[in-house]
Amino acid sequence: MSEKTVLVISAHSADFVWRCGGAIALHQEQGFDVTVVCLSYGERGESAKLWKDEGASLEGVKAARRKEAENAAKALGAHEIEFFDLGDYPLEMDRQGKDRLVDVIRRVQPAFMLSHSLDDPYNTDHPYATRMALECRMIAQAWGHKPGEKVLGAPQLYLFEPHQTEQCGWKPDTILDITEVWDKKRAAIECMEGQQHLWDYYTNVAENRANQFRRNSGGQAGGRAARYAEAFQSIFPRTVDQL
Ligand SMILES: [Zn+2]
Image 1 (cartoon, rainbow, N blue to C red):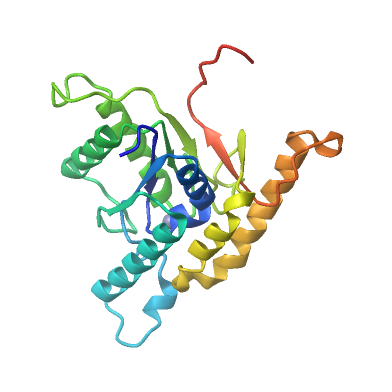
Image 2: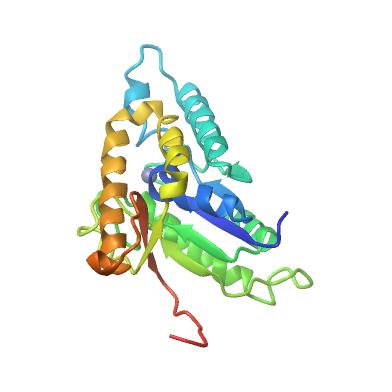
Protein backbone atom coordinates (compact mmCIF):
# COMPACT_ATOMS: atom_id res chain seq x y z
CA MET A 1 0.00 0.00 0.00
CA SER A 2 1.17 3.52 -0.85
CA GLU A 3 2.09 5.85 2.03
CA LYS A 4 -0.63 8.28 1.01
CA THR A 5 -4.05 6.77 1.56
CA VAL A 6 -7.71 7.76 1.59
CA LEU A 7 -10.71 6.02 3.16
CA VAL A 8 -14.26 6.41 1.85
CA ILE A 9 -17.14 5.23 4.06
CA SER A 10 -20.29 4.82 1.96
CA ALA A 11 -23.64 3.88 3.50
CA HIS A 12 -24.82 2.11 0.34
CA SER A 13 -22.90 0.63 -2.53
CA ALA A 14 -23.52 3.46 -5.00
CA ASP A 15 -23.07 6.57 -2.85
CA PHE A 16 -19.32 6.80 -3.35
CA VAL A 17 -19.84 7.02 -7.10
CA TRP A 18 -22.18 10.03 -7.26
CA ARG A 19 -20.71 11.89 -4.31
CA CYS A 20 -16.93 11.46 -4.47
CA GLY A 21 -16.12 9.38 -7.54
CA GLY A 22 -14.07 12.28 -8.92
CA ALA A 23 -12.08 12.61 -5.69
CA ILE A 24 -11.34 8.88 -5.77
CA ALA A 25 -10.12 8.89 -9.39
CA LEU A 26 -8.14 12.11 -8.96
CA HIS A 27 -6.30 11.03 -5.81
CA GLN A 28 -5.51 7.62 -7.32
CA GLU A 29 -3.88 9.48 -10.23
CA GLN A 30 -1.96 11.58 -7.71
CA GLY A 31 -0.46 8.50 -6.06
CA PHE A 32 -2.91 7.93 -3.21
CA ASP A 33 -4.37 4.49 -2.55
CA VAL A 34 -8.11 4.87 -2.02
CA THR A 35 -10.01 2.26 0.00
CA VAL A 36 -13.81 2.26 -0.29
CA VAL A 37 -15.96 0.66 2.41
CA CYS A 38 -19.62 0.09 1.54
CA LEU A 39 -21.50 -0.55 4.77
CA SER A 40 -24.44 -2.04 2.83
CA TYR A 41 -25.41 -2.73 -0.77
CA GLY A 42 -28.41 -0.40 -0.60
CA GLU A 43 -30.34 -3.48 -1.60
CA ARG A 44 -33.67 -2.55 -0.07
CA GLY A 45 -33.77 1.23 -0.31
CA GLU A 46 -31.82 2.25 -3.40
CA SER A 47 -32.51 -0.54 -5.86
CA ALA A 48 -36.12 0.09 -6.93
CA LYS A 49 -35.40 -0.62 -10.60
CA LEU A 50 -33.90 -4.04 -9.79
CA TRP A 51 -36.90 -4.95 -7.62
CA LYS A 52 -39.21 -4.36 -10.56
CA ASP A 53 -37.67 -7.37 -12.38
CA GLU A 54 -39.85 -10.41 -12.12
CA GLY A 55 -38.44 -12.96 -9.67
CA ALA A 56 -36.19 -10.41 -7.93
CA SER A 57 -34.82 -11.65 -4.60
CA LEU A 58 -32.83 -10.04 -1.82
CA GLU A 59 -29.74 -12.13 -2.61
CA GLY A 60 -30.09 -11.43 -6.33
CA VAL A 61 -30.39 -7.67 -5.81
CA LYS A 62 -27.40 -7.66 -3.45
CA ALA A 63 -25.30 -9.57 -5.98
CA ALA A 64 -26.26 -7.15 -8.77
CA ARG A 65 -25.47 -4.12 -6.59
CA ARG A 66 -22.12 -5.63 -5.60
CA LYS A 67 -21.19 -6.21 -9.24
CA GLU A 68 -22.15 -2.63 -10.17
CA ALA A 69 -20.10 -1.19 -7.31
CA GLU A 70 -17.08 -3.34 -8.15
CA ASN A 71 -17.26 -2.22 -11.77
CA ALA A 72 -17.57 1.43 -10.70
CA ALA A 73 -14.60 1.14 -8.31
CA LYS A 74 -12.59 -0.34 -11.17
CA ALA A 75 -13.60 2.48 -13.52
CA LEU A 76 -12.37 4.97 -10.91
CA GLY A 77 -9.12 3.07 -10.37
CA ALA A 78 -9.85 2.64 -6.64
CA HIS A 79 -7.22 0.62 -4.78
CA GLU A 80 -9.75 -1.63 -3.03
CA ILE A 81 -13.43 -1.90 -2.18
CA GLU A 82 -14.79 -3.77 0.81
CA PHE A 83 -18.42 -4.67 1.53
CA PHE A 84 -19.65 -4.97 5.12
CA ASP A 85 -23.14 -6.20 4.10
CA LEU A 86 -24.80 -4.77 7.23
CA GLY A 87 -28.20 -4.33 5.61
CA ASP A 88 -29.97 -1.06 4.78
CA TYR A 89 -33.21 0.77 5.54
CA PRO A 90 -32.26 0.77 8.30
CA LEU A 91 -28.49 0.52 8.37
CA GLU A 92 -27.37 -0.74 11.78
CA MET A 93 -23.92 -1.44 13.14
CA ASP A 94 -23.22 -3.55 16.22
CA ARG A 95 -20.03 -3.72 18.28
CA GLN A 96 -18.55 -6.30 15.92
CA GLY A 97 -19.21 -4.07 12.92
CA LYS A 98 -17.60 -1.11 14.67
CA ASP A 99 -14.52 -3.17 15.56
CA ARG A 100 -14.29 -4.22 11.93
CA LEU A 101 -14.43 -0.60 10.73
CA VAL A 102 -11.83 0.46 13.34
CA ASP A 103 -9.56 -2.32 12.04
CA VAL A 104 -9.91 -0.96 8.50
CA ILE A 105 -9.22 2.62 9.62
CA ARG A 106 -6.07 1.56 11.50
CA ARG A 107 -4.86 -0.61 8.65
CA VAL A 108 -5.38 2.10 6.03
CA GLN A 109 -4.16 5.03 8.22
CA PRO A 110 -5.87 7.51 5.87
CA ALA A 111 -4.57 11.01 5.21
CA PHE A 112 -8.25 11.96 5.06
CA MET A 113 -11.65 10.29 5.15
CA LEU A 114 -14.88 10.88 3.23
CA SER A 115 -18.46 10.19 4.29
CA HIS A 116 -21.99 11.62 4.23
CA SER A 117 -23.60 14.81 5.56
CA LEU A 118 -24.36 15.06 9.28
CA ASP A 119 -28.10 15.18 8.62
CA ASP A 120 -30.44 13.82 5.93
CA PRO A 121 -34.17 13.64 6.66
CA TYR A 122 -34.75 11.69 3.41
CA ASN A 123 -32.27 8.98 4.18
CA THR A 124 -31.31 8.34 7.79
CA ASP A 125 -28.81 5.65 6.74
CA HIS A 126 -26.55 8.42 5.40
CA PRO A 127 -25.98 10.41 8.62
CA TYR A 128 -25.88 7.11 10.51
CA ALA A 129 -22.86 6.10 8.39
CA THR A 130 -21.20 9.42 9.23
CA ARG A 131 -21.84 8.94 12.94
CA MET A 132 -20.22 5.51 12.67
CA ALA A 133 -17.28 7.02 10.77
CA LEU A 134 -16.75 9.59 13.53
CA GLU A 135 -17.20 7.06 16.32
CA CYS A 136 -14.81 4.57 14.74
CA ARG A 137 -12.30 7.34 13.96
CA MET A 138 -12.39 8.19 17.68
CA ILE A 139 -11.93 4.55 18.74
CA ALA A 140 -9.06 4.13 16.26
CA GLN A 141 -7.29 7.06 17.98
CA ALA A 142 -7.59 5.46 21.45
CA TRP A 143 -4.37 4.01 22.85
CA GLY A 144 -6.42 1.68 25.03
CA HIS A 145 -8.17 0.01 22.08
CA LYS A 146 -6.16 -3.09 21.11
CA PRO A 147 -2.97 -1.79 22.78
CA GLY A 148 0.16 -2.29 20.72
CA GLU A 149 -1.48 -1.50 17.39
CA LYS A 150 -0.58 1.71 15.56
CA VAL A 151 -3.15 4.32 16.64
CA LEU A 152 -4.77 6.71 14.17
CA GLY A 153 -3.57 10.32 13.76
CA ALA A 154 -6.11 13.05 13.01
CA PRO A 155 -7.36 12.67 9.45
CA GLN A 156 -9.82 15.26 8.17
CA LEU A 157 -13.36 14.00 7.58
CA TYR A 158 -14.84 15.51 4.45
CA LEU A 159 -18.62 15.25 4.06
CA PHE A 160 -19.58 14.66 0.46
CA GLU A 161 -22.65 16.12 -1.24
CA PRO A 162 -26.13 14.85 -0.26
CA HIS A 163 -29.03 14.79 -2.68
CA GLN A 164 -30.84 17.88 -1.33
CA THR A 165 -28.24 20.04 0.33
CA GLU A 166 -30.49 22.57 2.11
CA GLN A 167 -32.62 19.95 3.89
CA CYS A 168 -29.45 18.18 5.01
CA GLY A 169 -27.88 21.34 6.48
CA TRP A 170 -24.82 20.72 4.32
CA LYS A 171 -22.65 23.71 3.47
CA PRO A 172 -19.50 23.11 1.41
CA ASP A 173 -16.21 24.81 2.26
CA THR A 174 -14.00 22.94 -0.23
CA ILE A 175 -14.40 22.53 -3.99
CA LEU A 176 -12.27 20.03 -5.90
CA ASP A 177 -11.61 20.35 -9.65
CA ILE A 178 -12.26 16.89 -11.15
CA THR A 179 -12.23 17.93 -14.82
CA GLU A 180 -9.26 15.74 -15.76
CA VAL A 181 -10.90 12.61 -14.35
CA TRP A 182 -14.49 13.37 -15.38
CA ASP A 183 -14.52 10.62 -18.03
CA LYS A 184 -13.73 8.08 -15.32
CA LYS A 185 -16.46 9.40 -13.05
CA ARG A 186 -19.06 9.35 -15.83
CA ALA A 187 -18.00 5.77 -16.72
CA ALA A 188 -18.44 4.79 -13.05
CA ILE A 189 -21.83 6.51 -12.93
CA GLU A 190 -22.91 4.48 -15.95
CA CYS A 191 -22.04 1.25 -14.07
CA MET A 192 -25.02 2.04 -11.80
CA GLU A 193 -27.62 0.59 -14.11
CA GLY A 194 -30.22 0.36 -11.34
CA GLN A 195 -30.23 4.15 -10.88
CA GLN A 196 -30.24 5.59 -14.38
CA HIS A 197 -32.48 8.42 -13.23
CA LEU A 198 -29.47 9.88 -11.38
CA TRP A 199 -26.90 9.82 -14.18
CA ASP A 200 -27.65 13.23 -15.65
CA TYR A 201 -28.60 14.74 -12.31
CA TYR A 202 -25.10 14.19 -10.92
CA THR A 203 -23.53 15.37 -14.16
CA ASN A 204 -25.43 18.64 -13.69
CA VAL A 205 -24.28 18.85 -10.07
CA ALA A 206 -20.64 18.50 -11.21
CA GLU A 207 -21.09 21.25 -13.82
CA ASN A 208 -22.64 23.61 -11.29
CA ARG A 209 -19.91 22.98 -8.72
CA ALA A 210 -17.37 23.69 -11.46
CA ASN A 211 -19.02 27.06 -12.04
CA GLN A 212 -18.51 27.77 -8.34
CA PHE A 213 -14.91 26.55 -8.56
CA ARG A 214 -14.31 29.12 -11.32
CA ARG A 215 -15.97 31.87 -9.26
CA ASN A 216 -14.01 31.06 -6.11
CA SER A 217 -10.68 30.61 -7.88
CA GLY A 218 -10.73 34.11 -9.35
CA GLY A 219 -13.84 34.31 -11.51
CA GLN A 220 -13.45 36.58 -14.53
CA ALA A 221 -10.17 37.86 -13.09
CA GLY A 222 -8.52 34.57 -14.03
CA GLY A 223 -10.31 31.71 -12.31
CA ARG A 224 -9.34 28.22 -13.34
CA ALA A 225 -11.47 26.91 -16.19
CA ALA A 226 -12.83 23.89 -14.32
CA ARG A 227 -15.64 22.08 -16.14
CA TYR A 228 -16.52 19.49 -13.49
CA ALA A 229 -16.08 19.66 -9.72
CA GLU A 230 -17.13 18.07 -6.43
CA ALA A 231 -17.81 19.97 -3.21
CA PHE A 232 -17.19 18.94 0.40
CA GLN A 233 -17.79 20.19 3.92
CA SER A 234 -14.95 19.62 6.36
CA ILE A 235 -15.50 18.79 10.02
CA PHE A 236 -12.17 19.54 11.67
CA PRO A 237 -10.02 22.68 11.66
CA ARG A 238 -6.96 22.69 9.44
CA THR A 239 -3.57 23.20 11.08
CA VAL A 240 -1.48 25.52 8.87
CA ASP A 241 1.70 27.58 8.80
CA GLN A 242 0.33 30.10 6.37
CA LEU A 243 -3.13 31.39 5.51
ZN1 LIG B 1 -27.29 6.03 -0.12
